Image (cartoon, rainbow, N blue to C red; front, side, top):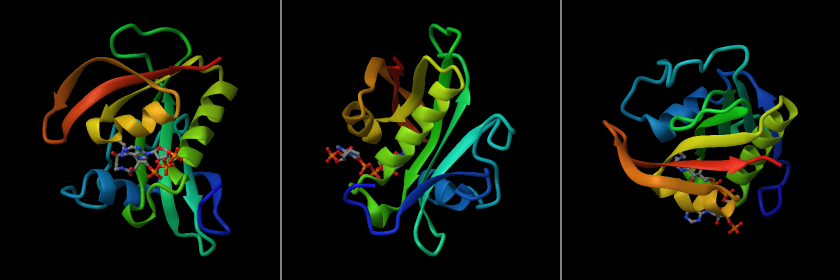
Amino acid sequence: VSGAPAGVRVLAVGADTGQALRMSVLRPWQSPGESMYAREGDRETAHYAVLGEDGTVLAVGSVMEEGHPREPRAGDWRVRGMATDPALRRRGLGRAVLSALEAHARGHGGRRLWCNARTGARAFYEREGWSTEGEEFEIEGIGPHFVMAKTLR
Ligand SMILES: CC(C)(COP(=O)(O)OP(=O)(O)OC[C@H]1O[C@@H](n2cnc3c(N)ncnc32)[C@H](O)[C@@H]1OP(=O)(O)O)[C@@H](O)C(=O)NCCC(=O)NCCS
């Protein structure tokens, strides 16, 4: 991982591995053991994480086959639960996770990735080649989002 702390690696992990970081970054108001989203624990849902040398989870994200919310097509995969440790942002860890999610989807027949991106993360996804679709919308209790997508070639 370029620019990241030495010894960093990105690995496929189980749902539980990144759960604490995912919850503390994205749903700090929920209790840590709660599930964050439907299908989080499904066998088909893939999770990738950047781990430090001691196994600490530094960044995490998930991907699953799911139709685009406005115009679903075969080969749609959804990215969820992207989170980087707040102390380690802007060092390429999120990019490393997203690349692994993309490779996973591609390897399983994925032809397009989409997500409900928090407005604060829009620039991150755009930097990684994603496009913003339509108007900003509110997810109650969480905040403003955009649908974003990336065609996999
Ligand atoms: C979004 C998030 C996962 C990005 O993780 P990260 O590890 O900081 O991302 P990276 O360092 O890999 O960033 C990749 C590129 O995007 C850029 N980038 C990242 N966050 C950015 C931001 N908020 N605004 C502008 N650019 C951003 C980086 O500068 C980098 O580009 P560069 O290498 O050309 O400088 C992280 O900010 C986060 O956990 N945010 C809070 C939770 C969240 O909103 N998750 C997404 C829910 S949809």
